[in-house]
Length: 232
Ligand SMILES: C[S@@+](CC[C@H](N)C(=O)[O-])C[C@H]1O[C@@H](n2cnc3c(N)ncnc32)[C@H](O)[C@@H]1O
Image (cartoon, rainbow, N blue to C red; front, side, top):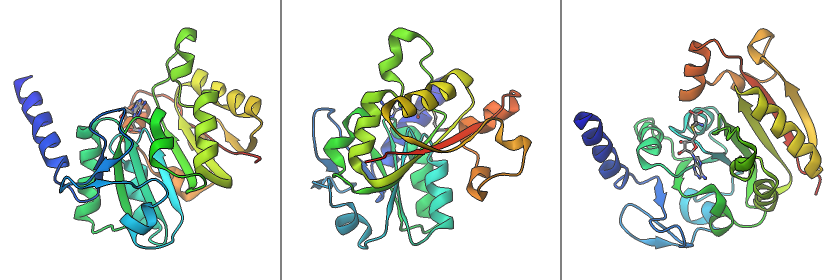
């Protein structure tokens, strides 16, 4: 227990020094801080100030250890990837891997997803991935689900017109909820597959397995994937 706490403190201290991590220490703030403590207004300027190119940006929301962010970045050097999570010790893993692999197309933002409009400009994002978010099964917690209509409205704003959302999930209730929420919002369902590993994968990158996905597979749970786009 004490070792776990010490390890967590070590990760927090280290994540503060990583050059690809941008953090918002106070939830009400609208600017991010880099490892040197410099305050940056990155909203609408991620490519100019962080990546120094004009490549399309993918956001991985609730990225945890950033498994998709890092694996996709290695596959697609001509695209930029930003992992978003509120927990520093989780981001630590992905940010460190990206540094060790010399991936310059990776960044992490330690922010609350509720606040993404403070940190990303209208149409700044090309694509979103959400993998294994907390399902919040109780009806009264619906508004915390990352595919609740209020979240979808924020995703629609930061995405370019026609930008897509990829969603991978074990929990069937949350998977069906996401399908229904996206359709009720007016999105177009581009792909829908339950139990993806029971058939050849539609896209190679679906084989990337996140930290939580590996645990769900070990527990015998099936993995499901859907992709939708906003019609605006
Ligand atoms: C179940 S884990 C999944 C992590 C990762 N996607 C995976 O598959 O391994 C959910 C993650 O969402 C993050 N999270 C939950 N609510 C969040 C919020 N409102 N803003 C930012 N991160 C959030 C948690 O910190 C946690 O890392």
